[in-house]
Length: 331
Image 1 (cartoon, one colour):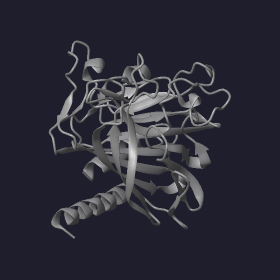
Image 2 (cartoon, rainbow, N blue to C red):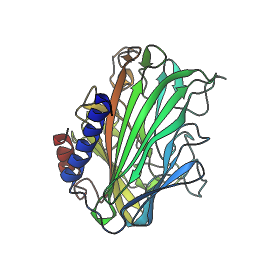
Image 3 (cartoon, helix red, strand yellow):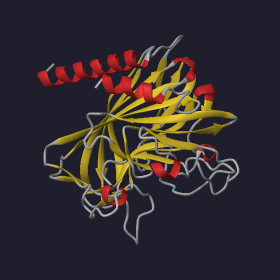
């Protein structure tokens, strides 16, 4: 093993152990399993479905469904499945995914394209690791971002760690490293991105279809709520609301080591919940377009790390603030 690989493996192990200890992570029985399927991986904990990772013949890889405490689905079904009573807007909002609306000028967020212009895709190239055990499952992949003409824009490496928690709660650590493999890489200034999840209508603050049933709320680390949290900077953000008669929540943590921490949040009252450190001119009035551009020099890379916590109750019952401090202390 070369020195670089040894350091990388030690770092991965250290982060995993620290994260598990800090979160008080525990599981019983079989633990995590990861099974190969037709263009997807199926992830279970103690034999019960947790999520599936779709990577073949899709515009970009995504996790669907996300099964939370009590065996309850915590993401919208559309566009993977049409369900009566769901909002069917934004077909590119695929459950839980990473995408961005300006990668060297190419829209890699939308699936519809604009004014006859196609959209970019993220293509899975290979798995670097698939491992599972009692306390953690790991999926590590290599991907390429390509334009509508098939030209490669850049590459990325992702490490996704799944940690079960007591009571059916769980965590997903999502790490993505952009690699400027085709020359200088620009991640452009746009609100359309990036680390994202789309929640069910009942968890949202507002819904076009289920207006009377949308009873969710948004709260961030700075105390800003609901629509006021959009475009604001915060260390963490939590989105909670009722699903099948139970209040559940999703918290996302911005790693203190991430560029531009604390990040901006593209979190909408209709259920889109996204971290976006790039769209500064959209989020902050008076900033010129391009303020949020991030340039990665040719041959270099840039890593972003996020943690999702799928928890019971609101941010207080989910101990979101405390869990964030434990997460931050591990970095």
